[in-house]
Length: 219
Ligand SMILES: [Fe+2]
Image (cartoon, rainbow, N blue to C red):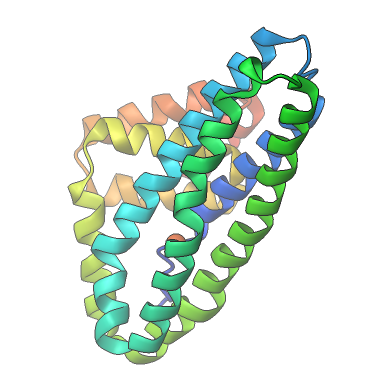
C-alpha cells in the first residue's frame, strides 16, 4: 500500500498566496497622496502578513530544513539562498511603506512601494512553487515517511492553541471544502475535544454560513 504523501507546505501556502494577491489588489486601490487612513490600514495588514510569513519561515527552518539538509542538501542550500534573498526585502518594503506619508512626493513614493511589493510577490510566488515542486518531491523520494510524519507531528504539537486558531483563521478561506474537512478530521482524531470545539468556533466565525454547514456535514 502506498502511504499518503505528507505536504507540510500546501495548506499554508494557499493562504499565503491568497493574502499576497489581496494585499497587492488593496495596495493598488489607494490614493497615496491623500488617504492617510487607507495607508494606515494597509500598513497594519502588511505587518500582519509579514508576521505570518516570518513565522512560517521559522517553522520551515525548525521542521523541514533539517530533513532537507540530511536527505537533500543541494535542495536545502537552494531554499536557504532563496530565503536569504527574499526575507530581507520584507524589512525594506516595511520601511518604504512607513515612509510614504512623510515623502516629498507621496504619490510617487506610494507607487514605488506598489511596484516593489509586486516585484517581491512575483519572486516569492516562485519560491513557494519551488518548495512544493522541488523540496516536497525530494523529501517524498529520499526521507523515510515516518521521519517526515514525526517532524510534522512535532510541529503541530509545538503550537499553542492561540497560534493554531490564528493559522486556521488564515487558512480556512483559502482551502477547498475537502481540504478544510481533512484539517478538522486530523484535529478531531488527535487533539482533546475542547481544542476541536475551539477550532470549530474559528470556522464558524471565519467561514460563510454555507461553508460552515458544509464543513460540519463532512465531519
Ligand atoms: Fe520558504
